Image (cartoon, rainbow, N blue to C red):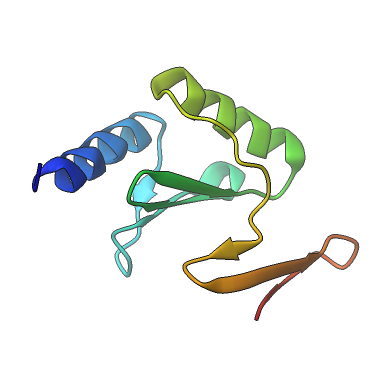
Length: 96
């Protein structure tokens, strides 16, 4: 069981590479795809998807759902103990 987190991280990385994501050189949990400016952050068994439009976001979510048995927990309110607040009209995210 001690290896389960590492095995999950390896599986997630393989799938993200297959979907043309590149791992950040600064953070092993951050993946990005330049062509559509999508970012995926992995933490334990969670994916956080950040994209420029709802359409692109939904496409990436569908790709991940086709590879993993996952459920959508809707938008992020808290992440790693940090409150996430956003102003969609201004396209600003506040970390409180």
